Length: 357
Image (tube, rainbow, N blue to C red; front, side):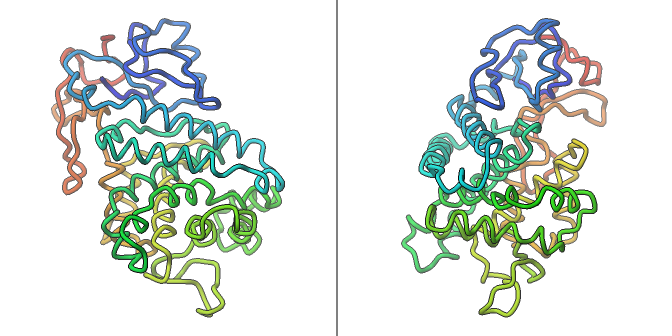
């Protein structure tokens, strides 16, 4: 099976995994469906970044697939898209956060049971509802980072028993809700900051306080801490100012969940630029990790990003220096630009000319 950009699908290709509606999570096209001209045309108009297609000789990849994990990601995305699309001050006050915690906990448990299934967690669809899409993607990335960093969490949360220190579900909930306060800002403030990319705007910075006020008492202290402190920086250059410190937090004074969310948040923002431009993973990873890594982020968390968001994800189609097309079958974080690949027979070196399976 191959991971193919939605704009590159062709009639005759068969789906290796179902395609789901970004807004509802319901199946639009079932596994095994053969695409035709009509469905290809409609698919290209949908806000779906990538699809999985069947391809001879790539069965090894499919052996690791866990459809349950893919389905859970889609349903969580739909839940968050709905929350953000209909958000207002009272909607958060009366939201049943247990539903989101349950959905995130289910995803966490499934990944624990089928670690290789995380390979199939692709880019979250739903750019038409950008706030919901961003929330879902940051949540998924934070969960993957958290599962990889469980031993680190134990050392960073020494006051807790190991089983509680490893509670990735609370991290995921905080990451999913990290920007809820943004929706209560004046739209003009958001537009102004988006236009000039000025994160120092004091009105914009209030979103962390607004979000904290909305969620405090409704979710765990560790989750709401993510909402308040996901813009704190490891080098002390972030916000908000904390009274006891007389300035922003820095280093280990920042809760480890907030440090994880900061990396996940930045990674997604760099991937999705203004105007709908999507930047390749490999470029974003280079920007964040070059010269020892961005000092604003916890270096341990930053290094883990290569493990959970590889430069060339499994199933993606790459062109080799020989001109051949190949599919990525595994990735090595120590050599992010040298994944293990399998040559795709019958291709002339242009990913837009992949022959139907």
